Length: 321
Ligand SMILES: NC(=O)c1ccc[n+]([C@@H]2O[C@H](COP(=O)([O-])OP(=O)(O)OC[C@H]3O[C@@H](n4cnc5c(N)ncnc54)[C@H](OP(=O)(O)O)[C@@H]3O)[C@@H](O)[C@H]2O)c1
Image (cartoon, rainbow, N blue to C red):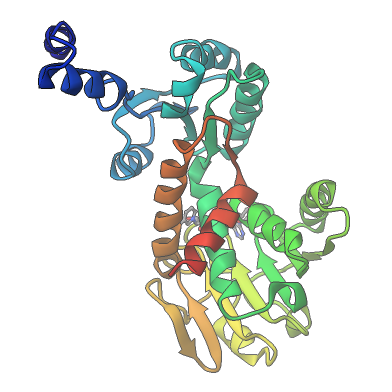
């Protein structure tokens, strides 16, 4: 209907106001394409969380695809690449979500391999919120410490969030002890990070439960706890006894918390000489970064927003407030 109305106006006399208005609409408002976000999710059901954030980030049309497997990705991506001219491709973007981070990583690589020349759209990976959560945790620490001169203990550094926390810290020159219940798993996670950051100072550490020996915390400036939901990783007694620890961040929002004594809402709360953040205390920053990253996807058609790019965006948000 709008198109017919626009056509009538374009048929108007060249000097008439109708003509001018019609021309303006045809080149401006009417012709600008709606912002489409194509959600690719390996889960049975697409993440409602990711969809709500997309709408709150001004996405106008959301195409939600669940149970996505790598061999279906090309067709879905071609649908993004070949429907709009190069100058309009920045109005289509892809968001890879879902709970399975490993599956999300495979989807991201497959998506990137579909692009060529200018035929591409921007894409963001945030499966299970791993990238935005890790970025928010590292930004919280950076408010209080010079990352390049600090030693971190990343508890449960083998999980998707913990690995990204350690990866981002490595990129900023921090000294990192990456902990797991298994020394071997910690070693594998360190090796993965070294592939990106060959100069990284990483030490794999095996922990033996909440009452771990104080030695593990020797010289540590900050502890970031990224264990599975509802798992306590370090006793309050041991954490508080660690004299060098200035910042303690727990990402587990489900009691019992990873770092007992830190409440889920704590946000730069000082307790026994340590600056403490709980999962929701970090979550506010995570949400800001998530929304800003979705908005940024539509600035241009060639962005790939993975952990590092999302962290840099978070840094720019911190610097602008
Ligand atoms: N605030 C937010 O917005 C937000 C968003 C996303 C995630 N999160 C939270 O961030 C945390 C990390 O997420 P994730 O997806 O990386 O976690 P995950 O994969 O479920 O678990 C991370 C690590 O926890 C360790 N772990 C698992 N079960 C354990 C047990 N019974 N005892 C001791 N350690 C155990 C494992 O390390 P090892 O086997 O190597 O010891 C595992 O690699 C979770 O608590 C999650 O809920 C928060």
